[in-house]
Image 1 (spheres, rainbow, N blue to C red):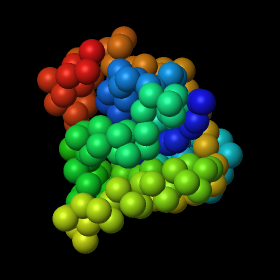
Image 2: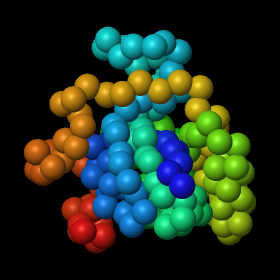
Image 3: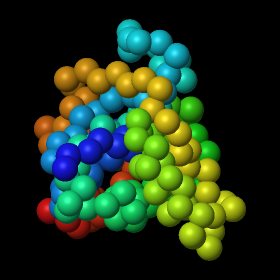
Image 4: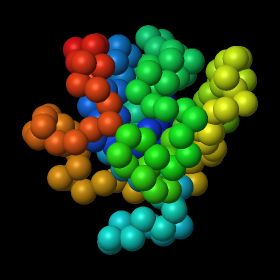
Length: 157
């Protein structure tokens, strides 16, 4: 069964490059989540850069995806990942499925460092696909800046 969850982990280029290599992930799309407008005409209006992730729930669970996601983020950093600073670079998990959010909250609650974690876990209110130039960006421009170490991006290839 194909399900959809959204991961915000700083700059979406690296997050997409990483997540699309994971076993059970079917497709990914770079975008923005939970902003206050329906367009991205230069204004971010509260959006978080994210990756729409379609995954086969019979192959990979939300908890497993969370394990992978926590490998590439600093879960203690508010509105910053690497050199990227600002609200649009906050970390979060968004979904329209309440059980995805429950699984993500359970994952965080089970961690010994849960009191330091600032990763949002919220219902997906809205989503806007990023421009084509941002889709699979690191495939086309592998030397562009990315906060995720290159060796980690290639770990699952």
